[in-house]
Image 1 (tube, rainbow, N blue to C red):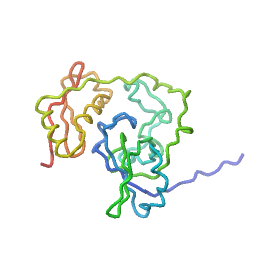
Image 2: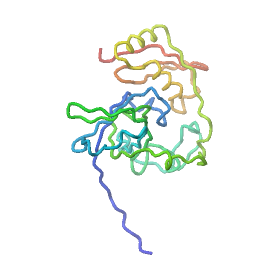
Image 3: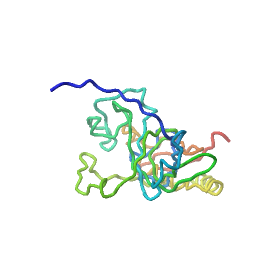
Image 4: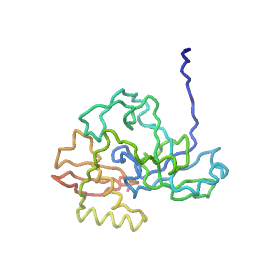
Length: 241
């Protein structure tokens, strides 16, 4: 059998993600976990055309194919330490959804909340996305339950149930969060609780306590501390104010 030469491909960016996640730390490991996360997919020229999305409004979810643009220059790894295994075991990169892949491409099934038009823009409103702000999008496909849901599929090493952590707010942080919600209409408190409940810390910090962490959401920084069996949100900062 003749060995074919590898083919190199070049794809054109057709959209960009505008997301509440301004840095990698804190992004959920799968879409749909943080339902309060609000994102938009803006179609770029020449793809911001009605003809390209005709019929899409009839679907509740879409597949978003994107590029891990922040880790492309870090190279790929044959094996990685999946967070679901608490960093204790190595698995082949093709057995995981790690960003450190030979081709830096990701795919997420995301709720399509609506389609917005105006000011020469065409925007898909997304719910529960797991995408970094500024993520390049290279394709969109409709999610088809009859084809995409496989009831008897096996989860492999990811079959362990996801544990969550209780989240509490200091009075100071809660007051600032409520003011922010009133001024912006955003579900900040729910978003923070859902993001932190999944314990975004890297595996080597999972057993530490009384250590402060920062997460950037929208235009604010969330300062929180890990305690024995819960996380405490201490402060909400506006870096640009």
